[in-house]
Image (cartoon, rainbow, N blue to C red; front, top):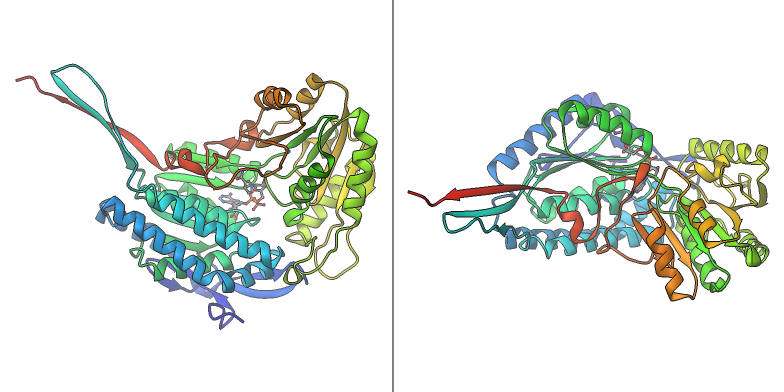
Length: 483
Ligand code: NAD
């Protein structure tokens, strides 16, 4: 057992100290790979939240981060990156067990979190304003200032890297931040508090709370004490948060779900496509907002692609994340039931289950890698986010038809084009309704490439320099020199 979990309880990191749950409450956390209890997280309630809000406000008013020399703020973020690497082995072990993902993916997640702190650490002293010419009687300039207290709600699929994705630019810009971890796997994210503590981030500038979404999360976003909301999660929760934000008129960033399509033309490199399919829909058991949830294939190569996809899916070795298998469990029994129910609707709508389509017969929450073929674009499985290791394959005849099908859902997070034709790749990429388009490699890009959705996939962008500007607001200062 890790040092952090020496008594089996992950505490809340609030005002620079480690707090028990309100009245001793805990959230029991399971290992999805065994369906057994793993550890507990101290459950934050009203008292802990009030403490976090007060300490965040005080830290902001004191100017702990905002008035720090920007280059010193940058160095502080670099120290956080170093401390994240120092806890990565312990953290990856925890993350693997509480989320079900592979140990190596959990290590990568901590590394990605460190990279976010390095990236935004490097830009903390480059958030430059501008001077606006108004003639010789005026001096006019715009500055970027932090919002104040940023409330950030994190999902369970990549709790550590998604938290870092928002927290690092928020800190770089000088905000105080309160992070609400996901109740299904809060512990590795709680450990991030250790990295902040060891990096000597001022007490109160960042708090990390373990709490239940509809309870603590709802109270946090409804609070009049926050100045910004950053939400990553599902559409219905995003909509509920936006309703709360409307009451207090709080600026919000929404990173929501997806139903992203790869468009595969007849000249595509099929080996490359299969490698992309494996990572695109089977990595993290398909629980990725930007997963390759649909594959639209030119009819001339359709049968071949379906056959190869089926043999890929059937050949994946399932196992507990600690064994670094090719296929891992989904997060919970509830998630398994949701997948099962949606696939049943697909079968009623005439979809062909070409591979998988069943729970795996082993302890834990395993769904077989699934290929649904002959999927009508209007089928529920082609329209709704399944959030599991399930992709839908659909044939098309023309480029225009493929674009129409790809754009024919209410989402618009990412999309893909697979072709060797350079002109076609640019032309189709421009027409796809998505915040990011991958050409010939799913998940191409990285922490420096802007990411976010259109339509019900949300608004605002994370990652890259672009994200930084979500975490500041513009103030213009106009000075008359007359008289
Ligand atoms: P979810 O919406 O159920 O929960 C996300 C977070 O919101 C959790 O921390 C939860 O506790 C909290 N929450 C729940 N109800 C709340 C409420 N009423 N008020 C405030 N907070 C509340 O989503 P999930 O199941 O954790 O994550 C999966 C979803 O997230 C998928 O739809 C996926 O596509 C999406 N996602 C999007 C991105 C992105 O960057 N666009 C990244 C990862 C996941």
